[in-house]
Length: 297
Image 1 (tube, one colour):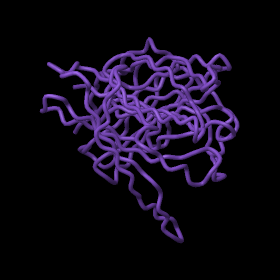
Image 2 (cartoon, helix red, strand yellow):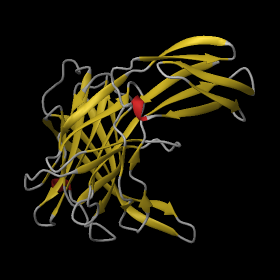
Image 3 (cartoon, one colour):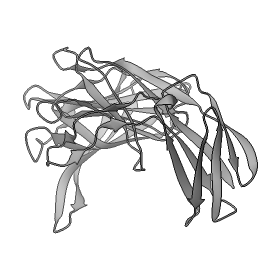
């Protein structure tokens, strides 16, 4: 049996639902919580207790190899909590609660600060959320070394701006990001590297979206820039293709792009931490959007 705990110390809030461009509503609410994830428990029915720093207990019935139990309490909005003591199947365990901080400020393309929501999507019963005021400054806490897809959007979503996405396979330290949010989105963006070359090859995939049109304008190579730790790459390959989305009644094809870029200078050794930033900008097409991916080598 393996057991670990994840911690959401972001403050409690509850706002009006967020409505996307297709009319779907999403509850914008953060409940501070501890998630206890158990993999291959020995028993199918047992009692789990949190003994410290607060007391909770749950009766657990397991129907699969992995189960997640959530304990919500506004008292968990406390980053000084670093561990919990639990009792499971008659044994006491100390589980560490390690989180990292993402902070920064959000602006629009004109340099005006934006009040935003930050949403660490997990697809489970509870997600990680935070919000900031009109000054655009934010702090967001997320568990160490847990895969992250962070959605950041204007609190008046899809009226004028879409969103910025930040991804990583797992935070290993505190970081700062300063998103600029425009009318263009790089959805489902992915970054991967081919390192064993004189000039490491960086590959990028994304699906475009725009705030006021169903189909975004066709992009050209000169509309996209890729940066690694602030240095611009030379884009060697730029491929436009389509991906298929299967709806309930029909299939829809949507544009997508794959790019390959190299550093303009030979890299003797890659740094252990690389922030990859993709920027789409065209004054002629009146579009701007960006996304980032943090990679630890």
